[in-house]
Length: 111
Length: 114
Image 1: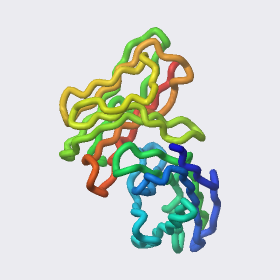
Image 2 (image 1 turned 90 degrees about the horizontal axis):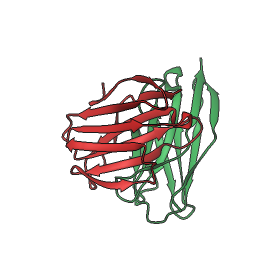
Image 3 (image 1 turned 90 degrees about the vertical axis):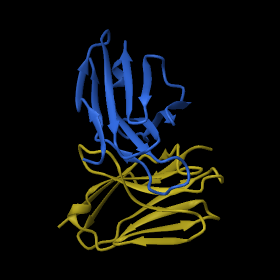
Image 4 (image 1 turned 180 degrees about the horizontal axis):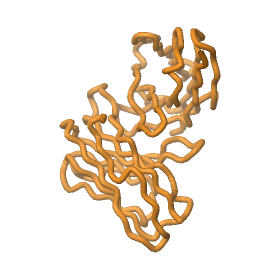
């Protein structure tokens, strides 16, 4: 009930490609869905977040798509760059505290 | 720096040692968290402090003991750890429920238990 399942575990794309990372959840009480980006040697940093009253949110090259009926949400990175190479975590919570995180996706973007 | 500072960055300790991890934030946040990050596993929530009171303890072994003396500081006291406790320990802070500014994480303490 508390799990957030994330896939794929790793992803390799060429510069300009559109990597997509998917997450699924079970707890219908979850109402806050953030994505975090983590570079080596650093802690995760908030990238973008969505609430279930909208189906899509864009911030720069990052887009979250949200499907409430399927209990799934995904991160799309448009025109990916080598600097986007990092580990991405989805998360979910009821309210904005006590986040439950996915297992992470290691993204590598090659020039 | 993100505004959340963790010290030390690296720690190697024997199973019989006692050590403490420190976390400090001056963002005006009123909730603080300890997470454990192990390879290929989700970030595991260990402890939550809200307004300096512990509100969550996720079945963490007693060899981990948190302390939150004020809203800006959080400690994790360690004693008689096991090798499987080796991981990256992350501190985070946030506002209480109601704001979407999310968590601010520190860079973590890489702990190795030998």
